[in-house]
Length: 180
Length: 180
Image 1 (cartoon, rainbow over the protein chains, first blue to last red):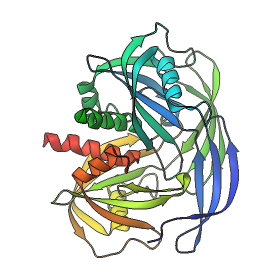
Image 2: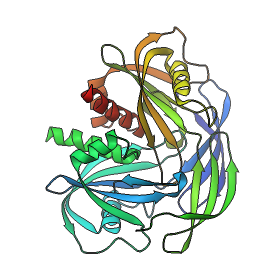
Image 3: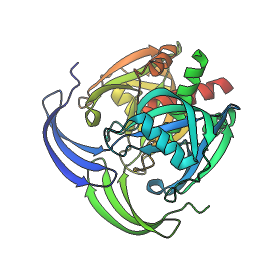
Image 4: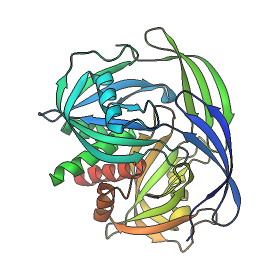
């Protein structure tokens, strides 16, 4: 079965600070014409930072789009489209938690919402953590929590953690860890 | 620590078929003013449909925003903001796979990308499946795959499944199943 859609034309609707909105005309596999609304996002990195006692560092922060405080793993956007994911991960972990890690393990990437956006999030495990003494950045309004990984799993089970990237990272870490 | 951001003003940038784009001025916890770009999405439902032999129904489809064919669990948007999630799930499962289920189990919801969108996806398990004989809808360009759940887990591990909602649903199902 033919699945691919062909781009016919493109219009840039909006260029923002963190995202662009584009509207496309596309040719569907059956030849019909349709439109696609696409949110262009620079991409991001999310970090499962875990210490020797299996404690995970989580951040509590207000998410304006949903008007709620969420509990998530540390994460952040690329500064530029060609930023190295690992460098981005190191920066975001330091900015949000004040931590550095001696060991970084790549867990692959996910697409968070491929139906309307190209956002791609790279997932890392960060181990052998050191507190570098710094507080979170002035413009980062986050509260850091240190929670044992078994409790993190329970928080997913009981709906306290409902952030997709955080759930994906935990699952991928469990898969990775089982094999080690 | 104060985390909440207060809305000061709102501008609607774009109203589309599947999403709206809004720009806000907000007051940060420290009193500074900033902007927030928000993609309003109607919400969606994703379904882990699994038969008596632990086979999962997956759909292969072209995702224009990332210009790739992805393998995902069946899913779809609400027709209206107040559509019942279960009704939406039943409709989408039938439209994408031609299947009906006698048993539906709610696994909670996730936020896919709370940094820039309010998209909320409700997750269900669908069991005791019947093929109602219909082919996928004419405007659904999807290829249906039937894959054992252990192989689905391997596909997540080796990066063949990189769709966040599919990974979250599988993890939540494993949690649910362990307890039963």
